[in-house]
Amino acid sequence: WKLGDPISRRAEVFLLQASGFQRYILSLDTNSIESMGYVKQGQPPFVAGEYLAATGLVRQDPDWIAAIKKRGIQDINKVINIPFSVGHFGDPTDQQKRLTRVASYYPADTPNYWGRPIGGLSALLDLKAKKVIDVIDTGVTPIPGGTVDFDTASVGVRENPANAISYSQPK
View 1 (cartoon, rainbow, N blue to C red):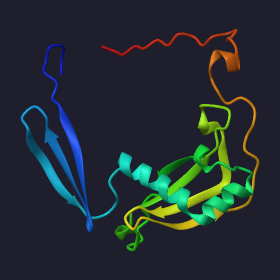
View 2 (tube, one colour; view 1 turned 180 degrees about the vertical axis):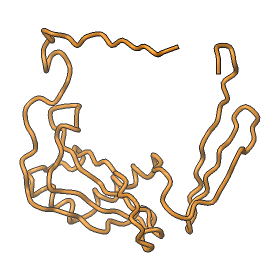
View 3 (cartoon, rainbow, N blue to C red; view 1 turned 60 degrees about the vertical axis):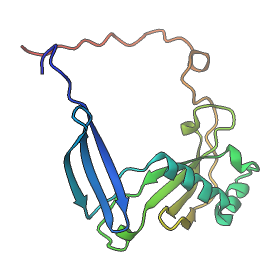
């Protein structure tokens, strides 16, 4: 590619089915399918609706609610739940499920919820069955305190700012 050449536009699309999923590469320039194939193992990426479904499932689970209350958190709506991929380890029974592991965060006083994980608590969900398989509670650990934000008000002005980045590439 060189300056002035057209840029090919493509989209990757996944179609989730009961027995696996299909992967399509679409040309947005020609409105055509460039490639397609059936994928028997693994899982396609999560979509936004699945993130919302995971949060809803966890917030309705009595074991998760009890674990949150045990940590002194009364308003479960202030807890942020983030679904993560569990990976694929070759268990054939997992192939029929849509597994995700949900980690919980309690931001309380900060917009940076990543700095306030609820340690010792996670939930394993099957999004295809729309159910919580297990809530793992290894015990209450303190939620980190102190500042976790990165704005000037939180960390101050750097006395020694980072050096400018310089890029070079041989010709």
